[in-house]
Image 1: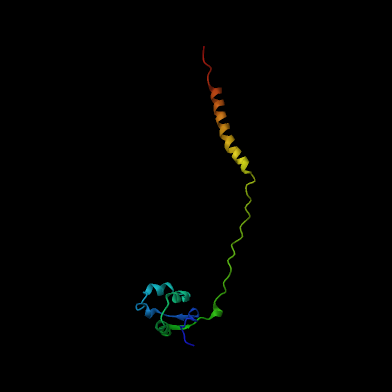
Image 2: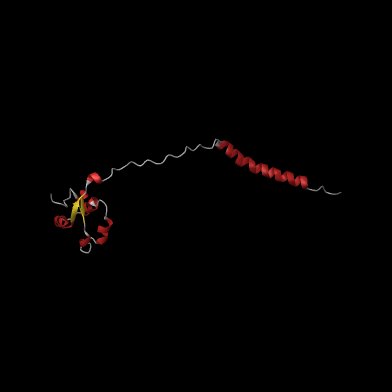
Length: 120
């Protein structure tokens, strides 16, 4: 089996350390793909057949797919059920209107109670 062909990039390990300085796309491109599946990155660029042939030089080995853990579906932790406030919106709006009126009425009541009668 020829290593580094387009069909097996995602199951193959390459050490491109020696190629970092010579890579036409710069070393950042290679470093950003370190330790992950770089198949899409490699294919998106559209490497030439000579670039694909060079990959054999950097071949390390094949990935043991039996050692890869299966992906688990994320299940969020269960949270306690939140009970909404039992007070209806109407009561809240009514209180927002009545409380200031009551405070105003109380202020007038206190003022008139504490006001001293005019002396004649």
